[in-house]
Structure formats: structure tokens, C-alpha cells
Length: 261
Image (cartoon, rainbow, N blue to C red):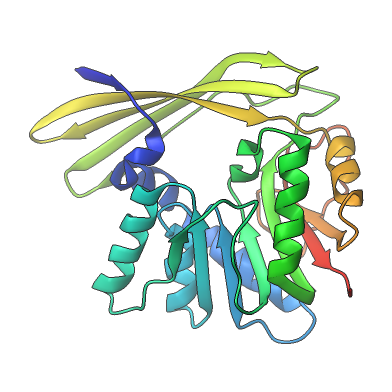
């Protein structure tokens, strides 16, 4: 099997297959979260770090105006080409999620699969939350999902899953390379094994993520007074079962409420 060491984000076809297969649960949950937590109507949505637009596309099909941004131009190109194929105006653009333009505030925003942890410092995280506060109107929400580091109990460090579309199959495995709790840096190996009728290949990459305990995230939010933690849910995406975040929590979707200026 041919092996290349490249960014998984530079392979949007495989990325979209692997991470796009479970969109339905997130989509249903986000719709319910908008209805429950947004003050007023929800018509305009923003997805920072939208990647290939696996959720953005479905939100637009569901009747929302949804825009997205991402640093990776290949992912944005993939996203916009899909929108064009379905005769939808392209709304994704290349930008840094710490600094991006907004012509009109959005009613809500979402970022659900750990992309937030790519921000490598407290300063970047603060800049991101400030940028999102400028992008979301008062009374709106930001649904932010990622993995916390539990202070008690085991952690789920290794994951593997498979996705198939037609004659294309991608097997994925992710496992820890090293962790530095003091520096709050975690590195994970991630591997795509790709199988097509014409042959197979392997992509090896390393994800560098910033770690958060529940206390560290609460401290971060307090640095940006435009936001308040209104509620939290786990990755079962049950809108009727909010959770109390504590030292055992690992998978969480925070609902940040945009306060009045």
C-alpha cells in the first residue's frame, strides 16, 4: 500500500466521506437547539471551520441561509462545488476563524467536531470568541462541540471507524502520539486507509490540539463577556437531556448565549 504523509484536510473527498456520514444526528440536534435557545427566529447561520460543508450544505437544503469559513482552500473549493452542483449559491469562503469579515450578524453559529481545539493558544481562543461575538447577534447562540480532558476517570483516546460510498471505502484510526498537560498540547496520529477498485493508499497525519478541562473552558468564556454558557449537552445529541459539566465530562456541546452589548 502506498503511504503518504499529508494533511487529511488536503483530501476533501476522503475527509467528507469519513466525517460526513453522521451528519443527521447533529443536524436534528442543532435545529432543536436553535428552537430552544435562540431568542427570536433563526434564519441566518454561520459555521466557522466548516471544512467540506457537510453540515452547511444540509442547513441550506433545510431552508436556512448558511455561510461557512475555513483556512483550507481545498475544503472550501469542495464545499462550494457541491453547492453549485445543487444549484445553490456558494457561501463558503477562506478565512481565519479568529479574524473574518461579516456584513450582517447571524442568528446562530455552530462548530461541532473539535475544530475549536486547533486554536493553539489562549490568545487565539479569546480572539475566536470575540470574532464570533461580532458575528452573532444578541440573543443568538454559538453551539460549540469538542472533547474535554476529564479530571476523573478514563479518557477515550483511540478511535477507529469506517465509511463507504459506492466503490470507495475509507478506514480511519486515530490514537495519541504524546500529551503535555502543562503546555496543554496533545498530538494525535490519524490514518486514512483508502480502498478503491483501482488500488489502495494510506494517508498519515498528525493533529495538534489544545486541551481543555471544564474549568479551563469556563475561565476562557469569562474572558469574553459577550458570551455566557447557557447549557451543555453530550454527544448523544438529546435536546431534552442537558448535562451538568463536571470533572468527569469528556464529550460536550456547549451552548454559548450571545449577551446584549
